Length: 248
Image (cartoon, rainbow, N blue to C red; front, side, top):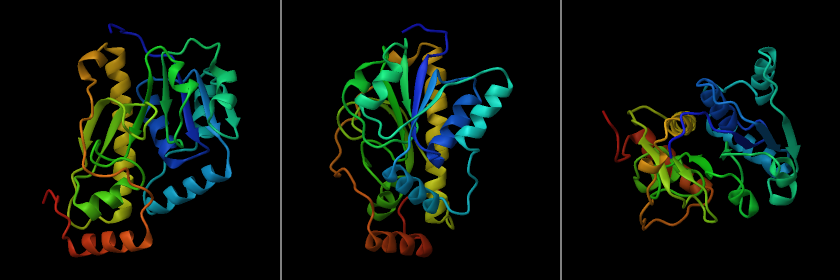
């Protein structure tokens, strides 16, 4: 892959999700402008947004999607912004079928399968706030502390599994004593955006073929949302500083 051009991509996210807001801020900072933004406006999307806002409470949140797109518009760059009730092929494909997209970038979505994944010429990419393959699924920072897995984020291709596609980038968060759960959730959120920015920079430079590789095997299950009992253990381990992967 020898590109040296910026990719044409659709950007999908849950409505005003802090994860997607941060990622958009990161990729726009390097001039990666979506061809179209498609937001899912749904009850589940609202629940996920509020859940994430609680997880990163006390930390900075990137400007809203609307604010960031308005800033582009003030520069003479108008990006279509579509709202759909769910990110499935029936709702999304009519808006992208005739667009010559190189990529689709997920900026925090529910699990998406089907025709959407096959549409762009060079794939669909996602950043996950956990180290793959060791921490797939939901609430990765919580499960990482609970099971003493290193904390970090990963950028990967999307297939029909859950966080199972080939890896592009993977990086640990340096966890220092005194960091709380909200700090860890925030750090993985920001790192996920940074890694997507770096992945798009690598695409522009034609380096993806050398970077992409299978995730490999993990003995851990695909994690679900952490229960109150799990979070209680997480908060206790961080308070007592018994988590296994501090850097100081």
